[in-house]
Image (cartoon, rainbow, N blue to C red; front, side, top):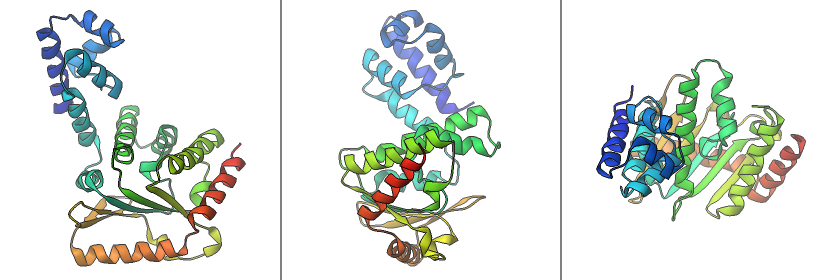
Length: 265
């Protein structure tokens, strides 16, 4: 059981009692059942963002529970990914390439769940945790001053029937909406007509910090590699630039994504 999950439950219990509320009283005020409040306080149920936000407001905790929940999500992240999350969260610029999947920062909950369920390697609880972590990461694109982010994906990502037609259509429409809503997000597609190119070696991501430092992340089947040494990070950037050069323009990529979305009806 997560230590942070226990700490969340203890903080909730103490704040509730200091406010002179029973579990039933708090449950009524935040529109949850008393059983749900009890399970969260015991550390046997993972709280939702909504529950944490409502409890923070009702108990006057100034976001304490929401911050603890972010820590729980970080703890639930795959160990190899955790060092990268610090760079991703603070970045002023992000560059990402994926040859096989929709990038995590662009995934809908349904797509992420279908992806994590597909291999049969994770339990239902582990799937819930990983989906929550993935959705939590996307807050970086919704912050007041989001990073300049450029995603490059292979066209096969648009064609792979992950989760079925409805999930794929929702996912592709989500990408289009995100691009419309956030001027700092761009998506490029490498068309199948390109054939062999540098990106087929695997996914990569690059983050630039507010101080100008650059870190890269290389993913693999077994683990992920955080690249911080400047010479190595420069090589990753060079590879990304070559891949970006093989991709379509934003306008052409949008047209291709729209066409793919229509095919999933």
